[in-house]
Image 1 (tube, rainbow, N blue to C red):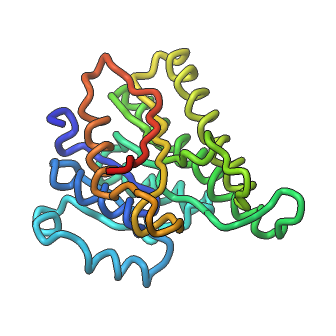
Image 2 (image 1 turned 180 degrees about the vertical axis):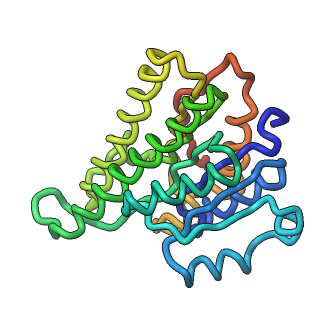
Amino acid sequence: MECWINKVVIITDCSDDIGFAVMDKLAKAGMIVIGFTKNESILEEVTKRLNEMAKANRKIELFDCNIVDIKQMIEVFQKIKDKYDGVDVLINNAQYNIDCLVSNGATEDIKNFIDININALITCVRLAAGSMIERKTRGHIINMNDIISYQIPKDSRKSIYIATKATTTSINEILRHEFRYLNANIKVTNVACGRIEGITETETDTPKLQVKDIAKLVKLILSTPEHLQVHEIMLDSVVQ
């Protein structure tokens, strides 16, 4: 992680357990961590949870930022550029996840899926990658995904969610080829997680991932040598 010390990482939606765990882990590793939150009340809640060491060292900064609002996103990325010169790592953690079928799901819900899980992700990638390419620096984009897009349950009612997560996988692979074509020193990694403790609603006796393990994995991915790229990881728990 030495190469990322004092480098800037953005985590979209740092208010959930995964986002907060990753934020804390990378701040302790020496990165300047910038978290996006959905509204002022969540901003205050996350601020209270921040590790005192990280706050004292000024390694964490939070933005009340609606990632669906492109104009606001451009303004926030400009503020980050003005203060820190640019973005070095982007972790796309924000997602919209409710039951919604293709055949009869509410139109507004489908719009939210597309706006948050696809359009916002692409916007963040474009702004972050633009910063990396402009400065000709090393960069890394990690897209937090869901293993459900690979192993579709027969009785799942999350059809639209699954479709958007499958789209994330495609975008990740496309970016890998685009950056190679552009000779950009930017890695992209797709992290597909299985059932997660405290987040995924499943039967109680089903083994689940711990958020701390996901945060460790993100740090491990960033720790790989510069000449190596982890394209994709499928992470799930096993029965003890």
